[in-house]
Figure (cartoon, rainbow, N blue to C red):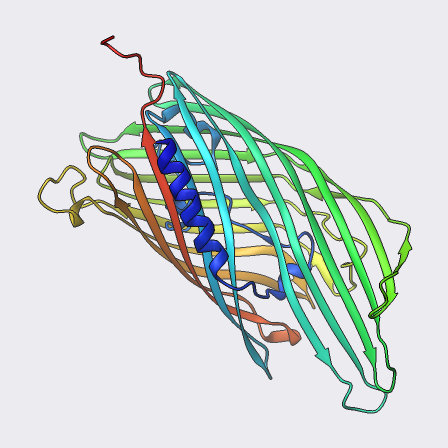
Length: 409
C-alpha cells in the first residue's frame, strides 16, 4: 500500500500542477473562498455524507472513523474553469487546487484519522483601467494564499448502530495581497503589499446513527458541530513607488478573526452496498472575517446556509462478469448562501455534481474517483460578478489491512 500512496501522490501533484492559476473576485473578501472540506465521494453527492462507511473515509464527521474496517488512504485534487461576467464584460479563468490528503486507521471499536485539508483559497487578479481618460487612474489588485488545516480525529462505536467522534484542527496559512495605483501623466505608480500570517485551533464533534427499517432498507443519520474559534492574524504592510526595491515598512496591525460555529445535519435511506438517497442541511453563524486591507462599507457577513440532496447507486458490487456493475455512480444538487453580502446582494451558489467510483486492482476495495461539478455563483446585479463554473475532480482511495498478525511463521 505504501507504494500505491507514493504513486498516487505523484500523479495528483502532476495533475494539480498542470493547469494555470486563475481568478475568483469573491476570494478578495474575508479569508477567501471557503472550500468543500470533504472527500470527492461526498462532494459528488453535493456533500451528502450520512452512511457509516467501512471502506471510504468521511472527514466531515469524526464519528465515521469508528466504522472503518480497513486502513484507508485518500488524496484528491480539482481542475476548475469559470466564465466571469458582469452586465458589460466577461472573462475566463482557470485554476487547479489540492483538495485533501488523509489516512484513516481502524482500531476495533475505535477509529482514527489525520490529514491535511485546505479550508479557504485566495486567488484573484482584478484590473480597472481608466488611464485613457483625463485624470484617470488604473487599479490592479492581486491576491493569493489561503488557510489550511491539519487535523487529528478519533471515533468510537458505542453500539453497532451508534458512533461518536471528535477531532482537533490546527488552522494555518498566509494571504498576500498587492494593490498598484497608476495615474494619467504620472510616470510611476504606488504599490502596497499586505501579508497576513494566520493561525488558530478549532474543534469538531459528531455522531452518526443507523438502523434497519425492514429487511433491506436502512435509515442513516448524521450530526456534526464545529465550535466557534479564533484565527490570529499577524499582519505586515509595505508601501513603495512601483519598481522601487526598498519599500517603506509600515507597522503591522495584528487582528483576531472569528470563525463562527457550524452545525450540519443529514439523513438518508438506502440499501447497504446498493443505493442511498439522502439530504444534508448546514447552518453557520456570522463570522468576523474582515481584515484591515479588505474591509469596506459595501461588505457585510451573514449566516451561512446549505441545502443539498444526493445519493449513489451500485448495480452489483460483487459482480464477477460485469466491470461496469461494480462502479459506484453518484449525483447531487446543492444550494448555498455563502454568508457574504456585497452591495446589499447576498452571494449564493447553486450547483449540480456527478461522479463515479471506479474499482482498481483485484481482491481489494481501492478505487479511483472522478467528479464533475457545474454551477453558478454570484450575480450580475448591483455591479457584481457572476461565475458560471465547471470543476473536474480526481481522487485516489486505497484500502488495505494493516497490523494483521500473521498466522504462520
